[in-house]
Image (cartoon, rainbow, N blue to C red; front, side):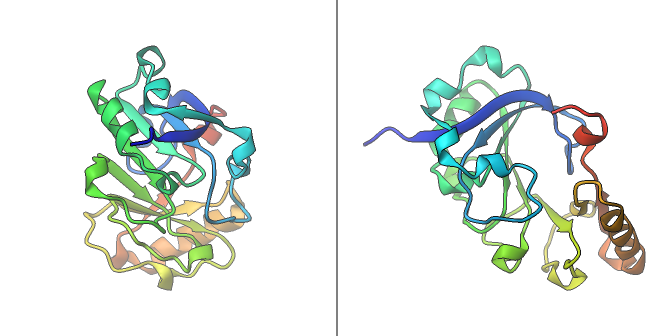
Length: 198
């Protein structure tokens, strides 16, 4: 069987800046390639595979660069690749492995992902093809509350994510949370940008 290799853009440690685990120390593995092209994406540099280095799970998982317990596989869109070998190696180090996905692809249980953050996007008609532990919806000018799918998530796990700190997005998310209290939504911000860290 051929060894799985991943197009790695960067590996770095910071804090989890968004969602349920906001504020936790985390190491991020960013893969290249995406099946969507959102105009407001803040990681457009991850679209291009030519900017990446193809690495095996063994090459990625070097213990001294994974000091944090919490590891986040992000992109681009990480579900374009078979993540099972990478997650397995991270689990051998005792890591808690989260993924950030646009939700367009299934996530096999065999991958062993510990936490799934799905952010359905307009480019896919807000389709959700995977299980999620939390949902994040970017509130852009076209966003409508109607796109929030039925879910069985515990309270506090559906976020209206502010679009890159735009005041219009902040106001719209704030208003929607107050207009629809029965949905028990949370306002999502990007803490790492507020603190001016990666």
